[in-house]
Image (cartoon, rainbow, N blue to C red):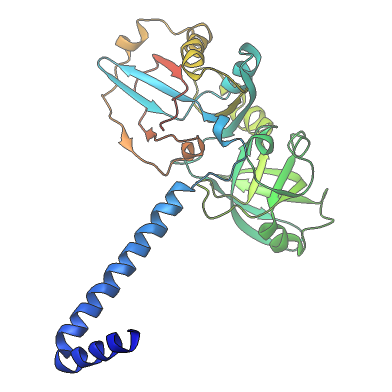
Length: 305
């Protein structure tokens, strides 16, 4: 049977060479396109899904109300994370990170006695490596960001600056960003961030340094200089928590109602952007927006199934 079909194929090929090649090219192109679409969809579905606490991991978004328009953005006050942890028993852990430029990690200039390099980095609070599943090769995830002058670097950056990934804990490096300079001691080394992560960075510095020394007196409830991520305890009702968490803004902000009318700002609209850092949030589609007015409310966006 197989031999008979093969003979028919060869005969048709000899008689209708042009049609045979057209069909072959069409079939090959269709299969190639189907494969590429599958690979793309598979990559999108697995983006940021490597975090072990993915099902309980959320990002806090700020709603800025301007008459009939509500703009939503991930930038929030850095004071929000510890306030959520202290005021809401449903919150297991809360983390603040520097918001960065347009949602990306900032590029830092780094140097040791012998080497110089530039690398993307973020400032993050103590529980960063407890919430996100970036594997530590050296150091403890509970300890690496305890010290204000600590620095956790990727294995690639460790090899670039020190030529190794082991036995470099305690070694110092100098960093600079936007003319601001600091010195840090290596407290840990993490495996390079996977390609299917929306966050790409080679260095994590302490958020305490960022807030106390860089933000300084401007670290208050009306300054939006951080992203906030948190994990909720098992069994938490997200809808109820969303409703409950809205109350945290008004007593903290203490913004006069008249302030919005005294300082009007142009209306702005949201721009869909599924590649923002908030894609770390489980099943969440978010948008980035320009800041509108200081009258705002808070919410944790529910997962979209």
